[in-house]
Length: 209
Image 1: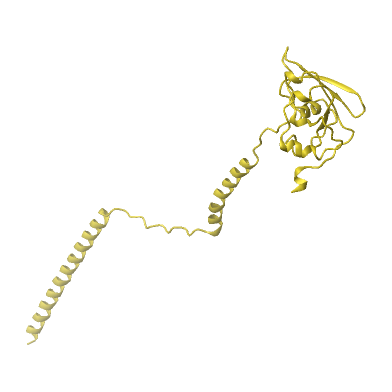
Image 2: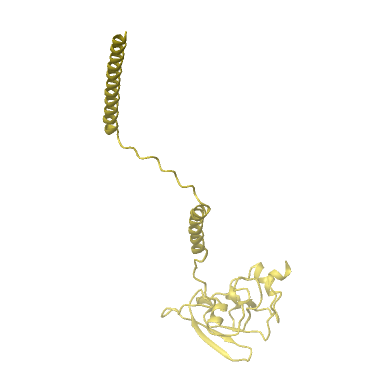
Protein backbone atom coordinates (compact mmCIF):
# COMPACT_ATOMS: atom_id res chain seq x y z
CA UNK A 1 0.00 0.00 0.00
CA UNK A 2 2.85 2.38 0.82
CA UNK A 3 4.60 1.52 -2.41
CA UNK A 4 1.49 2.29 -4.46
CA UNK A 5 1.08 5.66 -2.77
CA UNK A 6 4.69 6.61 -3.48
CA UNK A 7 4.32 5.67 -7.10
CA UNK A 8 1.17 7.83 -7.38
CA UNK A 9 2.93 10.86 -5.89
CA UNK A 10 5.87 10.43 -8.23
CA UNK A 11 3.56 10.19 -11.22
CA UNK A 12 1.60 13.25 -10.17
CA UNK A 13 4.81 15.23 -9.70
CA UNK A 14 6.04 14.28 -13.14
CA UNK A 15 2.78 15.28 -14.73
CA UNK A 16 2.81 18.67 -12.88
CA UNK A 17 6.40 19.31 -13.93
CA UNK A 18 5.60 18.60 -17.57
CA UNK A 19 2.53 20.86 -17.44
CA UNK A 20 4.55 23.70 -15.92
CA UNK A 21 7.24 23.39 -18.56
CA UNK A 22 4.68 23.37 -21.37
CA UNK A 23 2.97 26.41 -19.88
CA UNK A 24 6.28 28.28 -19.64
CA UNK A 25 7.15 27.40 -23.23
CA UNK A 26 3.74 28.62 -24.41
CA UNK A 27 4.02 31.92 -22.50
CA UNK A 28 7.56 32.48 -23.79
CA UNK A 29 6.44 31.85 -27.37
CA UNK A 30 3.55 34.31 -27.05
CA UNK A 31 5.87 36.97 -25.60
CA UNK A 32 8.32 36.53 -28.50
CA UNK A 33 5.53 36.84 -31.10
CA UNK A 34 4.10 39.96 -29.43
CA UNK A 35 7.57 41.54 -29.24
CA UNK A 36 8.19 40.78 -32.92
CA UNK A 37 4.89 42.36 -33.93
CA UNK A 38 5.50 45.37 -31.70
CA UNK A 39 8.86 46.00 -33.35
CA UNK A 40 7.23 46.02 -36.80
CA UNK A 41 4.50 48.49 -35.84
CA UNK A 42 5.03 52.06 -37.27
CA UNK A 43 5.93 54.64 -34.70
CA UNK A 44 2.96 56.85 -33.88
CA UNK A 45 3.17 60.29 -32.39
CA UNK A 46 0.34 61.05 -30.03
CA UNK A 47 -1.76 63.98 -31.33
CA UNK A 48 -0.80 67.28 -29.84
CA UNK A 49 -3.69 69.26 -28.36
CA UNK A 50 -4.38 72.51 -30.21
CA UNK A 51 -3.78 75.56 -28.07
CA UNK A 52 -7.00 77.32 -27.30
CA UNK A 53 -6.97 80.88 -28.72
CA UNK A 54 -6.47 83.43 -26.03
CA UNK A 55 -8.29 86.76 -26.00
CA UNK A 56 -5.02 88.60 -26.62
CA UNK A 57 -4.14 86.73 -29.83
CA UNK A 58 -7.72 86.90 -31.08
CA UNK A 59 -7.77 90.61 -30.34
CA UNK A 60 -4.57 91.14 -32.32
CA UNK A 61 -5.80 89.26 -35.38
CA UNK A 62 -8.98 91.31 -35.33
CA UNK A 63 -7.23 94.68 -35.00
CA UNK A 64 -4.57 94.19 -37.66
CA UNK A 65 -6.81 94.34 -40.75
CA UNK A 66 -8.83 97.11 -39.15
CA UNK A 67 -5.72 99.23 -38.57
CA UNK A 68 -4.56 98.61 -42.15
CA UNK A 69 -7.91 99.64 -43.59
CA UNK A 70 -7.97 102.76 -41.41
CA UNK A 71 -4.50 103.72 -42.61
CA UNK A 72 -5.55 103.48 -46.26
CA UNK A 73 -8.64 105.56 -45.54
CA UNK A 74 -6.54 108.30 -43.94
CA UNK A 75 -4.22 108.41 -46.95
CA UNK A 76 -7.15 108.93 -49.29
CA UNK A 77 -8.76 111.47 -47.01
CA UNK A 78 -5.65 113.67 -46.90
CA UNK A 79 -4.91 113.65 -50.58
CA UNK A 80 -4.76 117.21 -51.95
CA UNK A 81 -5.60 118.96 -55.21
CA UNK A 82 -4.20 122.21 -56.59
CA UNK A 83 -5.98 125.33 -55.32
CA UNK A 84 -7.07 127.90 -57.86
CA UNK A 85 -5.21 131.16 -57.33
CA UNK A 86 -7.42 134.25 -57.30
CA UNK A 87 -6.19 137.02 -59.55
CA UNK A 88 -3.75 134.86 -61.50
CA UNK A 89 -3.24 135.96 -65.09
CA UNK A 90 -0.70 135.03 -67.74
CA UNK A 91 1.35 137.69 -69.55
CA UNK A 92 0.09 138.52 -73.05
CA UNK A 93 1.77 137.20 -76.17
CA UNK A 94 3.83 139.69 -78.19
CA UNK A 95 1.56 141.61 -80.55
CA UNK A 96 -1.60 140.56 -78.67
CA UNK A 97 -1.42 143.02 -75.76
CA UNK A 98 -4.62 144.72 -74.65
CA UNK A 99 -4.37 147.92 -72.59
CA UNK A 100 -6.67 148.72 -69.71
CA UNK A 101 -6.60 151.61 -67.25
CA UNK A 102 -8.00 151.59 -63.72
CA UNK A 103 -8.74 154.82 -61.87
CA UNK A 104 -8.58 154.06 -58.15
CA UNK A 105 -10.49 155.73 -55.30
CA UNK A 106 -7.80 158.42 -54.97
CA UNK A 107 -8.07 159.37 -58.65
CA UNK A 108 -4.73 157.76 -59.64
CA UNK A 109 -4.53 155.94 -62.97
CA UNK A 110 -2.97 152.48 -63.41
CA UNK A 111 -2.47 151.10 -66.93
CA UNK A 112 -1.69 147.45 -67.67
CA UNK A 113 -1.12 145.24 -70.69
CA UNK A 114 -3.21 142.08 -70.51
CA UNK A 115 -4.40 139.18 -72.64
CA UNK A 116 -7.71 138.46 -74.32
CA UNK A 117 -10.05 136.63 -71.93
CA UNK A 118 -8.71 138.19 -68.73
CA UNK A 119 -11.53 139.59 -66.61
CA UNK A 120 -11.26 142.91 -64.77
CA UNK A 121 -11.42 141.36 -61.30
CA UNK A 122 -8.42 139.09 -61.94
CA UNK A 123 -6.47 141.95 -63.53
CA UNK A 124 -7.11 144.27 -60.56
CA UNK A 125 -6.20 141.64 -57.94
CA UNK A 126 -3.10 140.51 -59.84
CA UNK A 127 -1.85 144.10 -59.70
CA UNK A 128 -2.80 144.74 -56.05
CA UNK A 129 -5.60 147.16 -56.76
CA UNK A 130 -8.35 147.55 -54.20
CA UNK A 131 -11.08 145.36 -55.67
CA UNK A 132 -12.54 142.86 -53.20
CA UNK A 133 -14.44 140.23 -55.16
CA UNK A 134 -15.99 138.70 -52.02
CA UNK A 135 -17.73 135.87 -53.93
CA UNK A 136 -14.57 134.84 -55.79
CA UNK A 137 -15.85 135.94 -59.17
CA UNK A 138 -19.01 133.80 -59.18
CA UNK A 139 -21.36 136.75 -59.85
CA UNK A 140 -22.90 136.44 -56.37
CA UNK A 141 -22.02 139.87 -54.92
CA UNK A 142 -21.39 143.47 -56.04
CA UNK A 143 -17.93 144.12 -54.53
CA UNK A 144 -16.18 144.11 -57.93
CA UNK A 145 -18.38 146.96 -59.18
CA UNK A 146 -16.66 149.21 -61.77
CA UNK A 147 -17.82 152.23 -63.73
CA UNK A 148 -16.88 152.37 -67.41
CA UNK A 149 -15.37 155.79 -68.20
CA UNK A 150 -14.31 155.29 -71.83
CA UNK A 151 -16.49 154.80 -74.90
CA UNK A 152 -16.32 150.99 -74.66
CA UNK A 153 -19.56 150.37 -72.77
CA UNK A 154 -21.59 149.67 -75.89
CA UNK A 155 -18.86 147.30 -77.17
CA UNK A 156 -19.35 145.02 -74.20
CA UNK A 157 -21.69 142.06 -74.13
CA UNK A 158 -25.03 142.75 -72.48
CA UNK A 159 -25.15 141.83 -68.77
CA UNK A 160 -27.31 138.80 -67.97
CA UNK A 161 -30.05 138.69 -65.35
CA UNK A 162 -27.74 137.48 -62.59
CA UNK A 163 -25.33 140.38 -63.12
CA UNK A 164 -28.20 142.89 -63.23
CA UNK A 165 -29.55 141.51 -59.95
CA UNK A 166 -26.16 141.99 -58.27
CA UNK A 167 -25.71 145.47 -59.80
CA UNK A 168 -28.96 146.51 -58.12
CA UNK A 169 -27.11 145.97 -54.80
CA UNK A 170 -24.04 147.99 -55.82
CA UNK A 171 -23.16 151.27 -54.14
CA UNK A 172 -23.17 154.33 -56.46
CA UNK A 173 -24.79 152.52 -59.41
CA UNK A 174 -24.56 154.37 -62.75
CA UNK A 175 -25.74 153.75 -66.29
CA UNK A 176 -22.30 152.41 -67.21
CA UNK A 177 -21.80 150.20 -64.16
CA UNK A 178 -20.63 146.61 -64.62
CA UNK A 179 -19.26 143.81 -62.47
CA UNK A 180 -15.54 143.39 -63.04
CA UNK A 181 -15.73 139.58 -62.86
CA UNK A 182 -18.12 139.55 -65.84
CA UNK A 183 -16.14 141.82 -68.19
CA UNK A 184 -13.46 140.03 -70.22
CA UNK A 185 -10.86 141.81 -72.27
CA UNK A 186 -10.96 141.50 -76.04
CA UNK A 187 -9.74 143.32 -79.13
CA UNK A 188 -12.88 145.50 -79.03
CA UNK A 189 -12.10 146.57 -75.44
CA UNK A 190 -8.46 147.53 -76.06
CA UNK A 191 -7.84 150.88 -74.30
CA UNK A 192 -10.71 150.39 -71.81
CA UNK A 193 -10.84 152.82 -68.86
CA UNK A 194 -12.79 151.94 -65.72
CA UNK A 195 -13.18 153.71 -62.39
CA UNK A 196 -13.41 152.05 -58.98
CA UNK A 197 -16.29 153.45 -56.86
CA UNK A 198 -15.51 155.24 -53.62
CA UNK A 199 -17.32 152.55 -51.62
CA UNK A 200 -18.57 149.00 -52.10
CA UNK A 201 -21.54 147.25 -50.54
CA UNK A 202 -20.80 143.67 -49.50
CA UNK A 203 -24.23 142.18 -50.06
CA UNK A 204 -24.28 138.66 -51.50
CA UNK A 205 -27.00 136.60 -53.07
CA UNK A 206 -26.92 134.22 -50.11
CA UNK A 207 -28.03 137.07 -47.80
CA UNK A 208 -31.50 136.98 -49.39
CA UNK A 209 -32.16 133.23 -49.20
